[in-house]
Image (cartoon, rainbow, N blue to C red):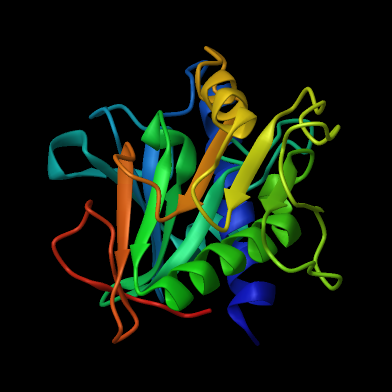
Length: 235
């Protein structure tokens, strides 16, 4: 069974187990920058160290990571009324310990993808396609700007942001640019990223001076700027 079917379900369920456990413990979910889905466990990399996880999770690396076994996750109960806590997780590829997903919200600014132009656009297009189909992203809007229309994927395809109603979703979403935004789109991007509620994330290919930079190599590896080891793309 493919990652899109079995792995995505496991990630979604693990996140809902986490959210349920935090709610029962009357504590907020942690700020998470990355998730690694391994063969036997799920690992959360926290942006702010915390050493008091809910039951079922163990602390690693001085509170910088929480881990839970997949066997425990699959047997845990979830409160269906609680939404998945990280709706903007995207799958980047594979590292030695499993599949790596990154939380675009953690950038707190513009996410840039550069390197080989064709591979960079393919990666961003894959992010948009997978996010639109991800169970943890229900309710958010996926907008593709400047890409060829993707009729087989959910979401919106537009030539530019300005003059379109794609940003009227109260739950927010992610805007994916095939090229650096221009003209009034730059103003709209700044407005989205300036929202204190962080309801929107923006990803652009070839944009200068991003807050979070990904570099795609011709060999299909991705430098995330977060991990020492390279990530191997799996589109």
